Image (tube, rainbow, N blue to C red; front, side, top):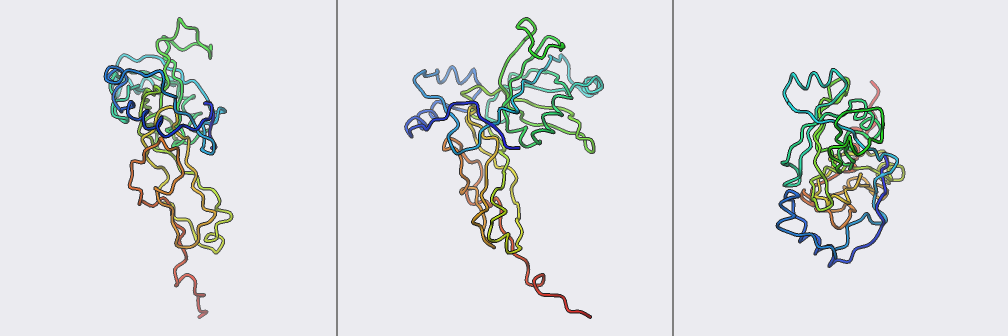
Length: 274
C-alpha cells in the first residue's frame, strides 16, 4: 500500500501558502464562491518532493447510478442486486456536508478497491465519480449517459462483520478549493534498523491514523514514521511528523503516535527452575 503521483511537483513560497489559506475556507463550494471569489493569480497547491504521493496504479473512476429513495428495505434490495447504497455530499465544514445526492455504486468495485488499498487508505484517497443514468457494459461511458462527473473523497464506509462486504459508503465532493478533514494512515519504516527494536524491545502503536485539515489537491495517501533512530523508551509525537506545510494537524502536537517499549524487569530475569 504505497500510494501515488499525478500533480507536478513544486515548492511554494511562504507568502503564497499563507495567501491561499486566507481564501480557502471550509464552507460549501457555492458559499465559498460567493464570499471568496476565485483569484486566478494564486498558484495551485501541489505535492512536494519527498512526501508520499497517490500511486496512479490505483487511479480508478467509481461508477454510480442515482437512487430516488432511502430506507432499510430499499438498501436491502440494492445489496441483493450487487449494489451499495451511497450518498454524495458537498463539503461545508470539512467533514459534514449538504447538497445531498442519493446514489448506488457497484459492490464488486468497492470491494476490490478496499481489498487492494486497505480500508484506511481507501478513506484517504481521491476518486473520480461518474453518476450515470444507468450502468452499462462500457467502462468509459459516453457523455449522454453521465449525470455528474465529480472528484470525491470517501468519508466513511460500513462493512459487514465476518465477510467485509460493503454495506454503505458516504462520499464528499472534493473541488480544489475544499478543505477536508481526513484521517491519514500511518506507515512505519526503519523498524529493521531501530536500535530499540534490535535490543528486543517492542513497538507500541498508539495511533494508526492522524487527522489533518487538508487542501483537497494535496491529501497525502499516508504519512511515514521513521523508527530507524529510536531507542528503548523513545517515542514519536504528532508534532514530529514530517508533512506538507499546508496541512493543519487537528490533534495536540504532544500526543504520541508510537513508543519503543522495553521489556519489564520481571520479563528480563530468567525463570528459576523448580
